[in-house]
Image 1: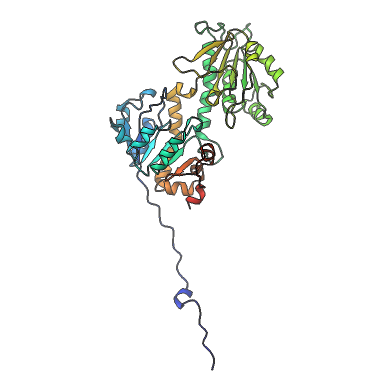
Image 2: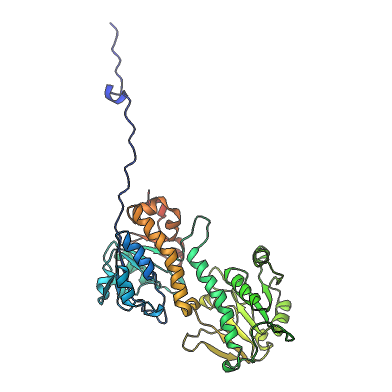
Length: 400
């Protein structure tokens, strides 16, 4: 008698099944809060009235704290006409699902935030403390640092844009400081017939250095750029399309250039602190009335004589050399900086809404994930974890 064979699968399981189509994403409505910046001398804002109008037309709600646009000369009325609700309550603004800030929120502002909220702001790792990250974790916040977001080409769009502003600003500031009213030598930053042009030394061939060189050349100055990366120097020469002196950071060559220059601009970045490449002895040998603009002061400064100053008292004189060492130079041109930030933010916010919220957007957008350093209160940035000895999880394992 033959034994009947049993199949491990039922007849229904062996039958072909129709393929399931992907369900259309449900467009999400964003509820955005824009609080007034409370950090000292921070005047920028994340969204302009035009950007608010664009978001409002797509059905998104924006609550703006009264006076948030004053630093950029945008009135409450302009934002109200664009579709934003003007609130006089800080707590109401921080009660929105998405918070947009330029500076990171204070511990008190984090207390106002609802659990599971989304925060967009700068991270500014070097100025933070452990309590800040513990407060975000406690509220289970999803935090995205806009200065860590990269585009599809691997470029940091916000950082690059603000660096462009800082580079151009450094030359404009130097030109202002060189006149007689600012204790300068009374020299005009430029090239006049029969008068030798100004000599400018730029330390660093990154974005800041490139735009500083571009502006200085445009005014007719003789420019020398120093950087230890031959690749950056070559890229700078190709970008400028103008003959410019370039060199690696050799002490004797640099010292000779500094002795002859009218302006020295520091635009070097380091992984942690900016390396000091100009000693106090080199500064002593610079011409009296010459100008130093240390853009690198945000991360320590590359001149040994640099000391942090403010927008209210921006300069000091040491060894006869005028020093300008104000951090956050783009805030000096707050409207331009705000327009730049807003132009980058708006497409991201519309994309998040189209994808149905931050969860789906981060799932399919690697560039957004790179900027995310907290996901529902879980730290996902290794640099922060190593800096403050905090537990870390890979964002790619949390978002599937």
